[in-house]
Image 1 (cartoon, rainbow, N blue to C red):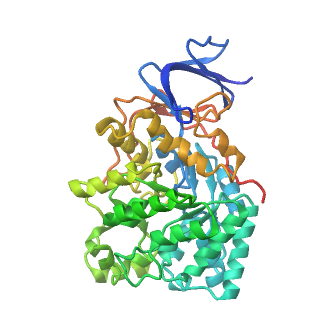
Image 2: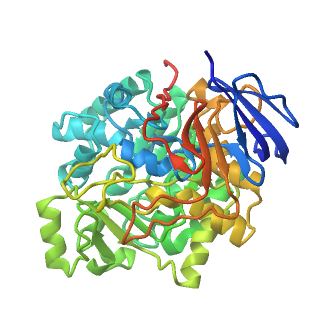
Image 3: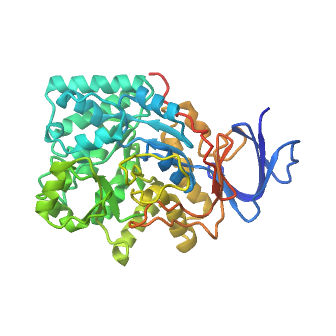
Amino acid sequence: MTTQVLLRGGRVIDPEARTDGTADVLVTGDTITDVGPDLPAPDGAVVVDARGHVVGPGFVDLHSHVHSVAGQRLQAMDGVTTALDLEAGLMPVERAYADAAAQGRPLHYGFSASWGGARAQVLLGVDPDADIRTSLHVLGDPGWQRSSTPRELDAWLTLLRGEIADGALGIGVLMGYAPRSDPAEFLAVAQLAADAGVPVYTHVRELVEADPSTPIDGSEEIVRAAEETGAAMHHCHVNSTSRRHVDRVLATLDRSRSAGSRVTVEAYPYGAGSTGIGAFFLAPDRLSVWGLTPGNIVMLASGERVADEARLTELRRIDPGAPCIVQYLDEDDPADAALLHRALAFPDSIVASDAMPVTFADGSWDSRLWPLPAGGSTHPRTAGTYLRSLRQMVRETGAWNWVEAFRRCSFLPARVLDATTSAATRKGRLAVGADADIVVLDPEQITDTATYLDPVRPSVGVRQLLVAGTFVVRDGELDPTAYPGRGLRGEPR
């Protein structure tokens, strides 16, 4: 028998129609089947009192690397219903989807074609295994960071075409990890994407302000690719790659968009990033271009703050894939906090978490226990990006109203995917016929609780979370038996 759920009397937001008013929402199976005032409760329906709460489409995260039940549960408590790894991707995508389906996922999931994985296979001979740990380890290998020969370029472009044919949701490009590679390669990727009708999700290379010797400014490269190929180009985490130059970067993107290019942008509300310690830009001789010292880096697993260049060199040699946190802005400094605010406030800027895997003291990368075991480590953005953004931008500053908040967190990210997969067209909306991916929020309670010292504390304020019509969060409590997540895949091309 098909389950029905009636959410009664909430403040219902549909960011597509820009409606905001009191209504009931009826869910039948995995679909929203009615929205309106005083709907009759069908026999046997689960009726939830949503009075005083905000009801909207669940958040669509274009940038999540959690790849685990534990990580997705933290994101569920933050209002996310779809968590996609599009900046880095996994390879082969067929295996990535099969592994996620076999393990079970609380949230919907999906992957881009991994530019890094394809290059590593051709340039290093590394067999892809659809495992982010392998990807993190490869990032610090100089053999992967170089430019390709014409034959190598053709070989890994062919691999990317095959991944798109297998359902990848675009191409994920970690250009910031190979920032000396030939810019012509990036244009070739953009042309491939334009021909296939899929987006490119890019961690850009260095900005000219930070490194005048860069082959091309990272933000200008995104703009050039969009303008020359017509590809849809998505600029990942503009806050962390732009740092104190974010105003110039946003102005560059705005000019290009005004001229008609297909450029989208995302941000998250933290002044520290996270990556593998072996990343190109964390080499001792590169830190100064970021205005950093080794002391700005903290190892996730141990909490060790790197003492000096000698220790940094040692850590990069021992385990280049070891996750670390890198502080590039001071969240307590009003000027730096204002930069983060402007990245989120930029017109049509999308909220995306860059959520990192959760690791535990025994070295494991997942847990089905809830609450999570003590001592887990990750970046706090994994648990808190969305409710931190809403707390700051809606409740504290009034920069967004609720319609705008759901545009940034749900509607706009889903629209980035529309050309790739028809399944996306039913997401990010709260209307009859839309997917029953719904979040119900307590507007007075929403907040993040995760910190850099205690990063696996769930956010507070999500009262209900339905994924494909199934409760993952009910009355503020996560259901550890719920695994309704489905793979979101690109159409055959």
